Image: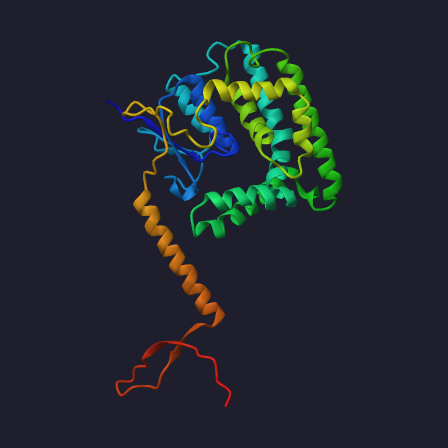
Length: 321
């Protein structure tokens, strides 16, 4: 029997199966199609075989690390949420996904990673508490830097010239995007009727973190909460497809086992990651000791064989006489 595909994604929180929008999109698409994935919800990208999240480990194509490529691979395996869509609906899917990436995603990055109050009090706090020691001391800041650079690429050279003006324009565009999504959804269960499609996976993965996170500065969040049909839409998908995945799995909940897939919380590289954490911790402590002058390397006198013995000594404070 063929081994199931393995999906590595960020752990859950805020009442969501994963806090990362890209990971959430893949998880949601897989649930929509019934793809047999063995899911590893991890607390660091270092626990992924590619060093990135999400990552899909396949038997034939190795590890795939981009969201759209993962979904394309699932379609090739005959797990296609868009199988019954018409040509017009397929075109609408492309248009709305493009709208999400252009108008909504930049503001989501700004809301969670650039807005100082949200980043310090919410985003960095969650990742620092979730990522294992000692990675939690520097990995959130590295992720923050990556998101800022990504945002600068999206916004162009004008980002640093008049940041306040550009921010207002982008938040205005994001509010208009949410309003348009609300109008397009209307009273339907999903965007194309009673069955979910890939567009629903992308929309849900962008809206759910914004809806569920407890943000100190929730300008865009307040607008989303005013659109009741979008709120009901997210709540419905969570209850239908992730009844036990709201961050922490209840101890009494049944768990799917066996080789045919299902979700699992086990860490496939536990011993390796423990050793890596110890080595990184030792390196950090030694680096601090050398930089602060607690430990130094001094050369002694030249010995008879012409070699200089190297001694590792601790510096002691001079005592006043």
